[in-house]
Image (cartoon, rainbow over all chains, first blue to last red; front, side, top):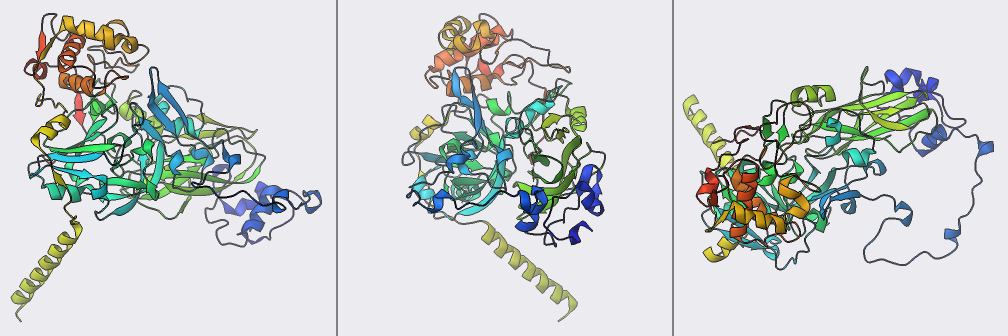
Length: 436
Length: 181
């Protein structure tokens, strides 16, 4: 039994975990190393290093213990050695502020995205808003139109909810005929997760008094695009929030300072940043971004419109392109899963291109409409492998294969790609994007 | 207590607890919203739905729109809306079906002419949004519709004619959201 052996000595070969194998390609029981005999840093270090005591590097007393460290900073920054952990971005010709900045999930762990790394999609730059001059107008089919200052909103009962936001265009390159070559960030970096704090929209709507005949609410931003979307009133009366805080601090400018609309689980574009206006209506406005964009063109020439909740999806962050594996042995496959329709109920992983699957461990807290981290111990035999993950959410919806998704929607849908993605690992340990 | 009375009491208790739950779920705010004057409201209330409600006075011709386009749009969208370096605005009408890449333009894809007016007025030109007059927005909208073969060279766009324009792709959108209405 692999689990009963003591730690120490040389690293383990894949044969050591024979009895822990749960699927092809060397996938191991998800419970391995969770509170078992091998638990803890000692076992992990010894197993992974593959180094004998005689070969071990000599331990030195480091220089930073012999001189005082640096002084305090007003706003803390990441270690300078982590300077490569940044968003990557691209703008449009003649409009550098129109485009997206992508989260480097391949360099992160856990489920909460640091504020400076939260993805951003903007349609004409980040406005420099004076919070004291900003106003939120609530009007339309209401008993009395009202205007709110930031100071006023701060006196309302606030709530916090953790929620992912994913751009409708995330992973859109996977519609392509050939697998696009890029790392996780380039292919899938338009999703992030934060704890958002603010005021429920329904509290403000109740104060204004919504006409019973109303059914939609038009939301508009105070940016240079006046970015706007129509949102069902039912969502606004449910968990929609005017978010003022992001992971405990004021919402970042790139995410809507001083306030944004949060619609947990819905397409990112609808969660209007720099929110300045909510107009209650009885029909969608048919704004540019809900007609010419964020609609799915099918092969028939028809288009799907108002595709609101993000459907269940999962992706492997580790390993992924750029994270080269260093020799056979034990690794932890890790990734993220999410669903706009509630909780992730399970994630399965395959190391043999989908021939066999095994349950991954879900790491708590598992929250609805939030990123959920999964892990899977893997004994890599040093040969080619194909890694995939498949999420199921609480509604029973199972993340589809790419082939199934494209059979239903064609390859021109552009938005809402949530098909199963595949990483190929070569016998050199290099990881690349492939279609299974 | 008879069974009937007991049942009735249980129902009352159940109703009572439901009422309490509803009161709690509707979080009451401190009522700090301020009234807004009709004049202030009008300045912000700019979106144009398919009905055309809210379209301003004024009008624009195709010829006037050509001049607006040359001055404010062409450097990004190319001659006659052909595109490059930014989105193409003209072409592809009637050619959306198929498996290959589709040319999605104002003419081929946008379902409502009112959206063109709304988007141009609020967002364009990208270097100076909201710098065009309502007359200029009507005119450049007319020009784009004409380039796409949707209106004639002498047609004039205003609050009455613009919402009446039937876009070629108008009936091709299927809503995935089931409104309660």
